[in-house]
Length: 154
Image (cartoon, rainbow, N blue to C red; front, top):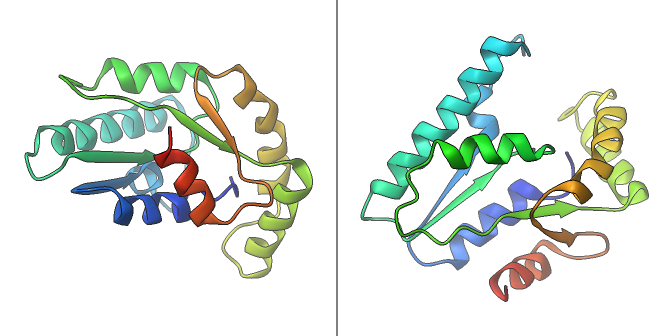
């Protein structure tokens, strides 16, 4: 969505001990990108499956998941399908103000990373994050390192 999720999670992976990072987009990287009930169920199953494998692996102490989760039902579904055992879960939503979000997305569009329709979709989702049962971190005017520090201080 342009708030810095992937960048922050990559830095967080290096900062935390024995960490592994799952970008939910990796579980649904297709061309054409098809959004329907079947593909939505598939990506949720893929994410849950990989998370369970990471949690069960003794090599990892910290598991980081990054994905656009703009509805509480998405978070709840994943959590209900993951064997958390004795895990401590921290649900964090990264946000940004509208101007910052548009700026970041336009840079991605100029580089060919995203297509122009992402702006409207992202702006429409922005207010939905206020409704989530997560810790909110506004990334506006912050470096990725500052955001990582903020997360580690929670």
